[in-house]
Length: 151
Image (cartoon, rainbow, N blue to C red; front, top):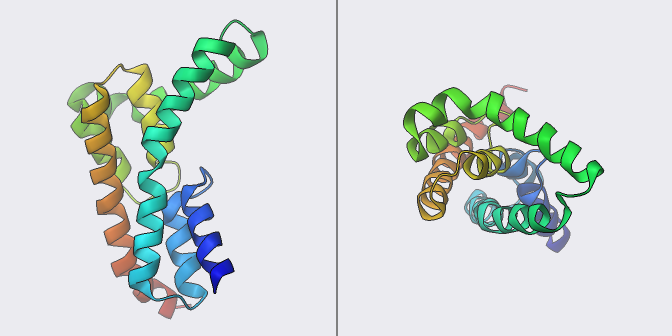
């Protein structure tokens, strides 16, 4: 059980699915949905503040290196392409809209990069991204039992 809780948290924190994958994983492992929701939400809410500070740190220390600059530009262009229209039009509300869509690659990591490259206020971004995460995960926790019962 401890292992399932830990994996649910780590999957929910990882950029390869976030809690959109962590919550179904935890439920399928037999954990209580209320616990899975709390674990997944907690992990996903940590993404913005930690990742934003990591972006600032790495850009300040490694942007002068070609290998880092190339990777940073690639991720920035990808984030701009995915979030650009909605974020440029609606700002921080656009971040929330982007994140609340429970699809792959519309999560907190890409939204954090978008917040950084579009220079959206940190506090507004924090609130918007976390609200988007909350809405998406509420949808997933409510819909997952219906989806999984059809398989």
